[in-house]
Image 1: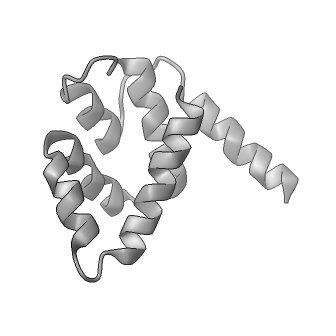
Image 2: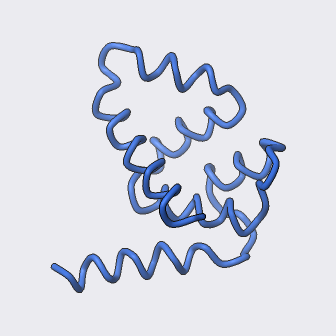
Amino acid sequence: MYAKLGLVALLTLAACGGGRPSGAISRACEASGRPGANAALCSCVQGAADATLSGSEQRRAAKFFKDPQKAQDTRQQDGSGAFWSRYKAFAERAEAVCR
């Protein structure tokens, strides 16, 4: 079990390199225009997304960068509980790993 966790951590950290964004989350992150949003940070956030969200969930979450109200609306929707739980796990992982 520890080996598996270590591998996940290693893959997440490897994604924190300065490469060009390659996923929906990293592209949305860079396009957001927020202070501090750069290729290295957005690539790291993409790594956290890859570890916690499916591809369709990443595309859904990427819309939150452009329209933060959409995140609030999603959180409050009936039936979004499973997605929202995974989204929160992604956000917590990104915050912890990408500082």
